[in-house]
Figure (spheres, rainbow, N blue to C red):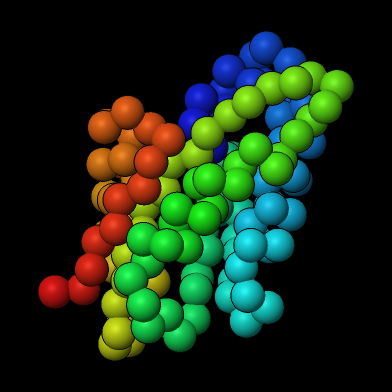
Length: 122
């Protein structure tokens, strides 16, 4: 979640927690039952999509474009997310997968946030 610290500083940690819960529910709703959604800590989530055979541009665009579905009506806040995406076809260890996806995430953040970066296995 982009600028999550500002949410906590402006509205308090209870509202920040409410927003994290809303984002988790959103991610669960917009993924398949066999996919895995994990909160890594703070405002960072990891989503494992299984059996992806198509370009990931469409699901990334869908996730980004429906964020306005998340609302904390009593605060009227808007927020954005940045995503780092890594797609691979053979077994790899979690540390390698996480590092590549994390690098993609920081590429998104350095380039203005509210976007995604997809890295493909070489």
